[in-house]
Image 1 (spheres, rainbow, N blue to C red):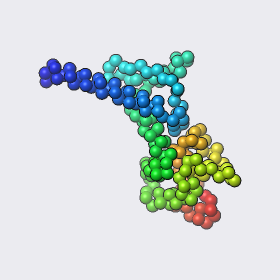
Image 2: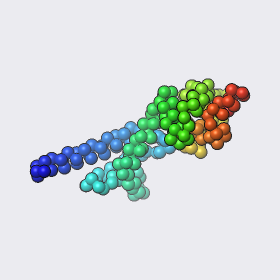
Image 3: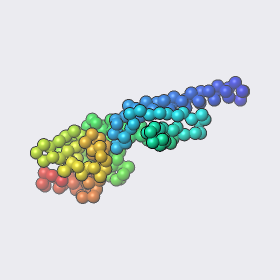
Image 4: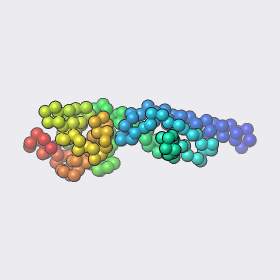
Length: 191
């Protein structure tokens, strides 16, 4: 390999690393302030590393001089979580996120998803803002009292993924499967 090709590849690699960091920063700055329970600072100071092996330093609170070292993979994970939240704000996205969580965290298949889909369609039509003013039930799973969802995240009022995670956890603990929860709902109009 010639010296010129090597230096061109090195420059391209550095530019790619910088643009990756810039893109991740833009994603983080555009994220909901409480996306999946993470509080993002309103201002962030970024110290870009001098070489590609070093990690990115994000100073969250300049007065306390506390720095958070965030590798690019962790930033990608945060961006993924923020994308999940934005996706779940619409019913179709909430269904997609739920199927993904069901498969990875609970090993529940399509049959269990079918029961859950019927259950949560009856309860909230997959609307994370759904609120029953008579009973106080709230969110996609219609938690009652709604504050129970705090065990999963304090952002349960605005974060559909927190609501989904709580709802799946509740079904797992109380009924073992969504189909058993659906059977209970059909008998008594609540679960």
